[in-house]
Image (cartoon, rainbow, N blue to C red; front, side, top):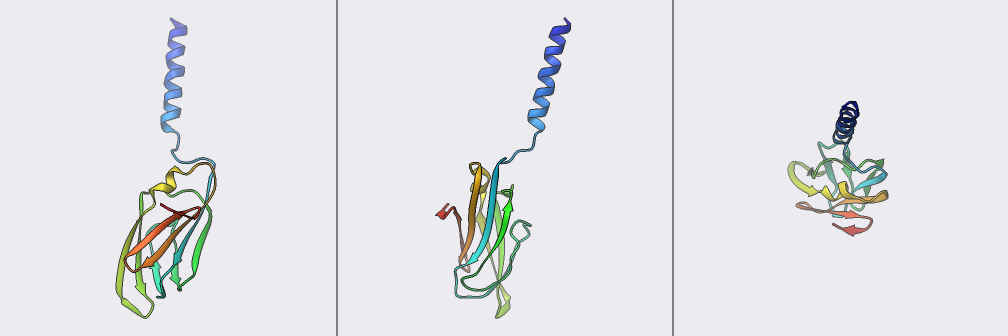
Length: 127
């Protein structure tokens, strides 16, 4: 009887530890860049702490080094041209692929290609 009870207690504790453990990608290191592939200088804002940008000139990128993959499916970038701050555009980029990276170091880039489009590149490949 005691052995059966111990077995169920150990099984219960193992189930709790497994179900309560944090989800994520252990062993994944990510350098996340936001680049401006347009000819316009933009003020780029995002509510996502992992994607903090500011002013982004054409051809320039800003990189956050060695971060954990964001635990969100998409990031919303708010753009306003440096010459006309009243005109704003919003781009939503699907970044869910960052959550399923294999262990190791990866380079990811959110490339702003127009006022209405951005692409996610992981290790140089478009996702």
